Image (cartoon, rainbow, N blue to C red; front, side):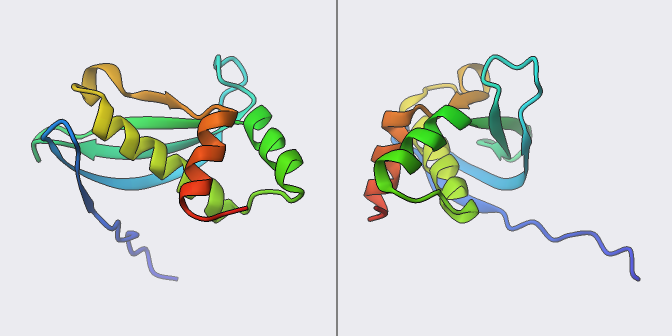
Length: 124
């Protein structure tokens, strides 16, 4: 077994505030039990807007929002749909938050924004 390092795909997003962000998905995990968003899945992205300083941004998808969506739509979300919702929440922060590094490092998805994000993708 080789000890190759996983290649991360650096992606670019031009935010409405005029910043061009580069980001990549680091991974996901259950939010820590003492986190205010718990129980939730935490999606972690590394982000930079200047190619010098990279910082982590966490997007929390609370179980209550996932359960509400599943109840309203008659089926559970897939892992890729959950990831898509987290990525869309990250993009919304890029568009709406003037200083993501200072004020956008912890983002949450509520039931309404989850439904809105997934309907943008045509998911029912």
